[in-house]
Image 1 (cartoon, rainbow, N blue to C red):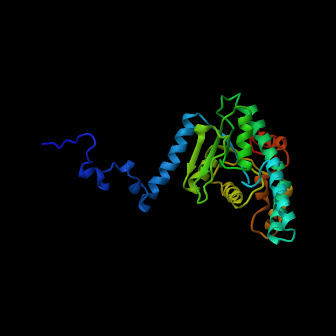
Image 2: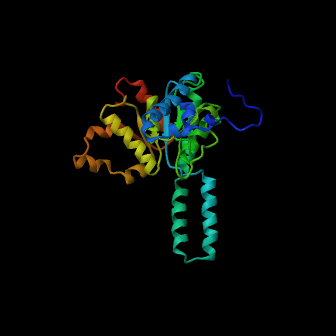
Image 3: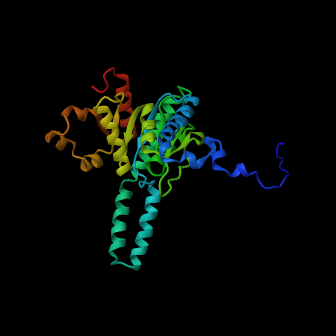
Length: 286
């Protein structure tokens, strides 16, 4: 005879058994190290299917530092540190923090340029393609990423945020199209999604994460493992001081032709014109 459970009674013994849970509902099972290949596949498929359902056929990826905030926020941070320093004018830690804050403030114009770039691209392309082409994609966090999502938001265009789960949680910025905001555990899968539909990549000044994403793209282009796309390094003064590409050529670690994989830009209009020129020429940039 089948056992019956009355309202409010304890669960049957098997309902508390891990072995009895449906496999896809069993979080402990899904988190096992030997199921990593399955988790990688699911993480790839979930975003891929969602973007296909939104009919997003091509994207422009914007990378950049999380610490480069809009000018008024940078100004607030500088003033707050200056106020602290008045109380402790010889504090070396505060002096260093203020110096760094001023250097970040000097780069805050990149926030405005990233916002203008995304607005320029989105307003020109999405209205013509029903939101399917040249959709802005970022890492979904603050700083330059927020600026680019914000620029698309300014003209009511779609934009995508590919957030990553970190020990110090990175929360999505509020300007991402809400049902195009994704979270990843694996950096590798996230970087695949950056490039799978990309028609261009624009790298603003940033730190380790920006460099990681930039050099992966440059390596894939160099080795013909991905379709060649225009790669724009935004802010020539920053990039040429950070990386001596000519030295790499002189040292024989890259070929001179590898320098044709990217261009520098200093304004939103210049970056967009470089991308359009590349994608309208059969062999890319002349």
